[in-house]
Image (tube, rainbow, N blue to C red; front, side):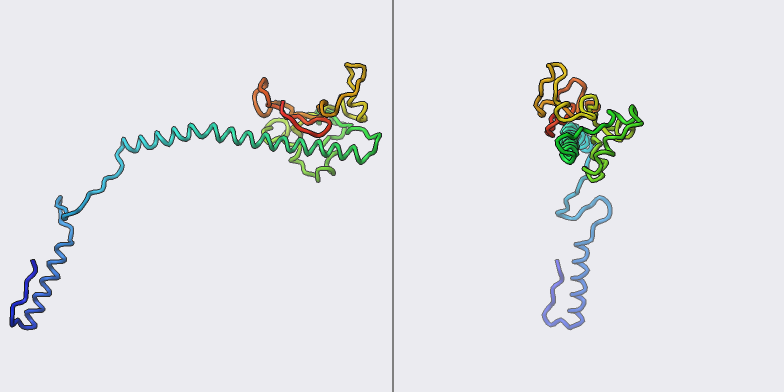
Length: 215
């Protein structure tokens, strides 16, 4: 392929042979013009339209399978957050009662601020016991009551407001028999924020003893 040196060649001849060798090597590496390809060249093809549609369909299917799981996990986390806030409110009411001694009465506030504008609100009464944290009174799933009323939870004022523990726990339907505090609901979600109206666990409640459940 390459020109060889003849015996007795001069330095000029050696130079010419070296130049010819370099030119030959360069021609071997230059890509030919047109449809001709160098030996050993492997063409690379991009995605076809069908392949792209298949990939998009697979991605859409995976997203469709994952979205319900993501939404369920998000709603479960918000439900737990709501329960923690109700527990904080229950603890704040217990501290409010303990700070007033044996004859303490439950906060004398209205069930809903808009229904009793002349009475103090539960938020203002309990503010010192929750470090003025207003978000405590907001359920993460509530988009109706908290923006309007400033609270997402119904305080059972007819049963508790202005009453002592003994009065609040006395059953009006059973000769004022004392009920256990873990059976008497103190507050609950205004609406079933965590499911449909007839679904179990759609509404969080806090009992008089401070524990929280879903009903």
